[in-house]
Length: 157
Image 1: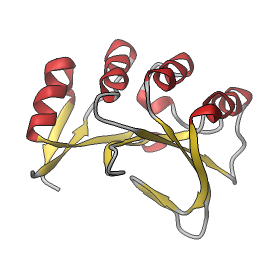
Image 2: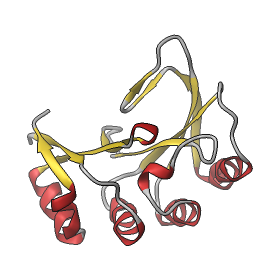
Image 3: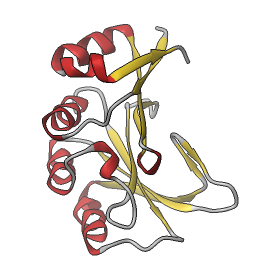
Image 4: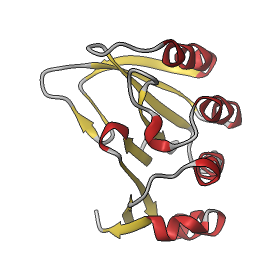
């Protein structure tokens, strides 16, 4: 099935953000958060990493992850199981998608399908985010979070 990119034109916040993260449990099995070694991480950010440890799958040193490719630098990419318990932790620590920026929090929340393909990508410090969706997925997501229709623009990959 043909995938399309749905770029966010406005930041999902509050209830819309909550509904996206909750809905994503239907589509996504893993999530990523990034800690850049060259930036400090505040106590709240370190606490988030600690709270997510029981759900951790692995942490790797990498120079790229969905939406980002560093030039000559690396970061720690934390990959963890994505489920309702993780959603509660994320929502306890953030109320909007582009809040995932160091030093306050780990960076660039990304949600991945079981195939490890990206479903939601964010580059929070650039206020950039997008979904990779086929037509049935887009229809289903927009039925659950209808506000997203006016908050995204569709681009062909």
